Length: 73
Image (cartoon, rainbow, N blue to C red):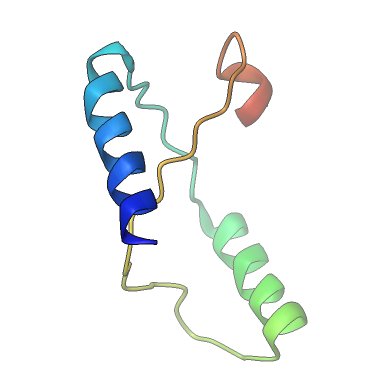
């Protein structure tokens, strides 16, 4: 398993120069916060006051498409 993780990491580093990062933040207004709280309640059964989380890992997701617009609508 460690070898697989290392291989993925090395591949990500060697191709990093070919990656273009597009900074297009999601609009996170009160409606989105309310919808997220509703999702948490419906799917996990928790009534939360805050939707803040403490990230534990970073996941690099590679989608092979010709642009970002189909992903973010």
